[in-house]
Image 1 (tube, rainbow, N blue to C red):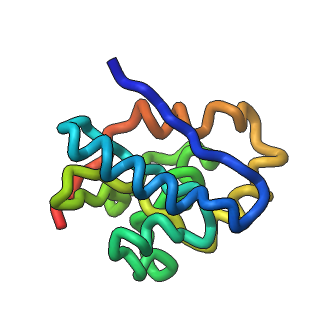
Image 2: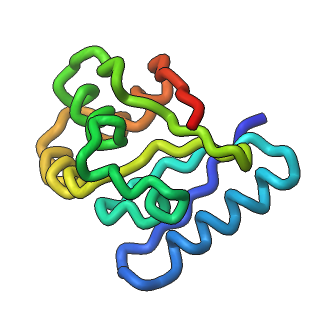
Length: 126
């Protein structure tokens, strides 16, 4: 059975990214499948796993959410990035800050992430 663990705090500097990365590695070491959805425009978790190119990439949560809000097909260049440690990551970028503003007026905004979950997303191995 899949479990969703959310590490959330509106205030910055509280250790959300560090906690996420450490928890993910610990779960992966116990042979559990882990998917990190980096929902922070600063993309610190993504950068911590070596993905520092996220601001210049369309392979992000931002692109996925934008496609869902515009009722478009998920772009084929949006990927889940796979780490050798057994951790998959959907990266974030600074564009997510703009997406957050767009969500204010979006219909069914509380279901945007759920709609992404129902789509098939290509997994690429890094």
